[in-house]
Length: 266
Image 1: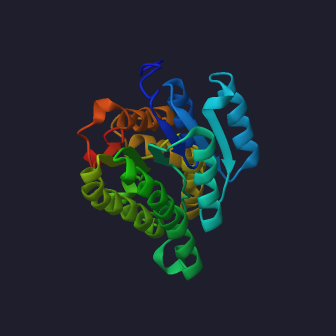
Image 2: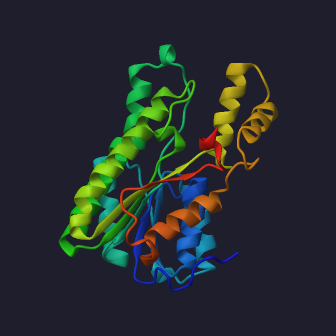
């Protein structure tokens, strides 16, 4: 179902990180359908190529830039921005969808695990955004949407490192939003609960292993804990991200938009 006009983002060049993940991939599809020029990036070459081929059935090649990059590497972050700008011009939209999950109880977390989690989900995202933001400041124009999580708003069992990284994203979003709006730049976050993606399925598998249950049992428990009775879809999250990039959301600043099927009410 088409929700947005095919010209809603015709004025935008949006950089989407984590485009090989479920939410990032769906976001790329939606934004391309809204007329945006899009740069997609991720670490999985095969999935990037697959997404590129799919998008080329939808839009012309001169509206897509594809860059394989590891955002934890400074040289890759700079190369990504340079390629994106040289091919599609000024980046006035940024969707930070890159990240990983991982559940461990506190006593099982070592320094390396914690550092990787914070680097992948927060530090590298912050540093990439910083570079893009500096150029947005010069133009006094831009929109940034960070993919956080309900885990960035509340703690849950065996989720300390992931939750800490997403709390960092939410806090950064709110603080940066106050600074950025002075330049006409909006910064917001989306905070999904369980989304029907491979990342969520892996999380449920880890939970099943800890609890000595099955994946099916954990999925059923998760669905029962949500008032709507189901997991969110990647499309629903992507539509929310897309809305936040449009002019219809011009006075939405520093928000953490929850997509939970009502689970935050329990």
